[in-house]
Image (cartoon, rainbow, N blue to C red; front, side, top):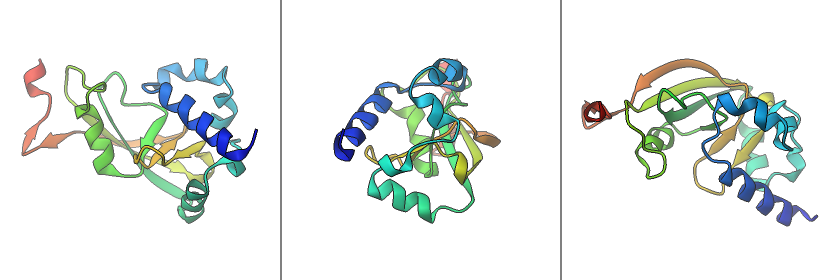
Length: 148
């Protein structure tokens, strides 16, 4: 399969797996994504843009994930805090409860995949180390307060 078809297939499949959380880690390891999560991705099959971004990243990368108590730990993260903060407010991601923002660190070598096609600056990793979790606040009021 040529590289362009592979990239299309890869990103199509990955985006259909939206909502995967750390709890699904064992199931994911049974798929072709399993070896990527173990830090052995075939970076030569990444887009040129993803490769370039990876090459510019520091050895330890700060990443963010927006979600809720039930899905705040997962495989998909963003390099952009504002993008991560927006996820719990998007249709299809909204749930009852307090939206949260997790900040984590990941070693560059533990990044399994970089997906740039959806403008999310997405980092896929099973090895994020969460350093803080906070309430997402909009206009000075914590979101989710009326969902109790």
